[in-house]
Image (cartoon, rainbow, N blue to C red; front, top):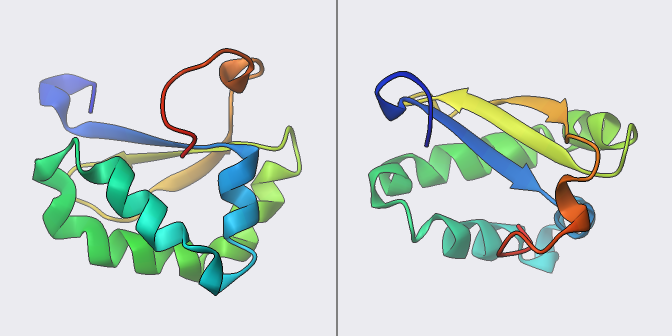
Length: 99
């Protein structure tokens, strides 16, 4: 959460997370759920956000072709973020959970 009144959010998807989108049984929804535990204000949006990410997996993977990773930028309370290529070097250092 960041931006004006903390209404903006960013979800960083590592290259490993992008591969989870390729297979519904790979556990992307579980990994996203675990990552969101630290943000209880987003829990109510989780089901819609998860459905959006899975539904837009193709578009997200196309964005990931740029450098392998994607960041999803959204504004609270909308569960419909926009995918952007991740900033170069973001995943080069340990930044916490992989998703």
